[in-house]
Length: 77
Ligand SMILES: [Zn+2]
Image (tube, rainbow, N blue to C red; front, side, top):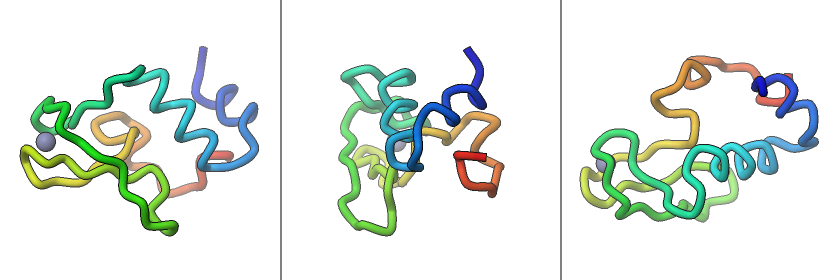
């Protein structure tokens, strides 16, 4: 499994992120900063895939802490 083939299967950034969240976290998303499971998905439409970590008051997305975090290109590319 590689990321490019995953991205090519999902037509939107949102669906890519949802898939990656499932792969990385399953049913229990956790904060990459403090490993807490006290997290909540942000609801703002322009922040798809962003989460709030309540334990350490940080925000993150599914790519935080991975090599993909540094990429600025849209996920579909
Ligand atoms: Zn945290």
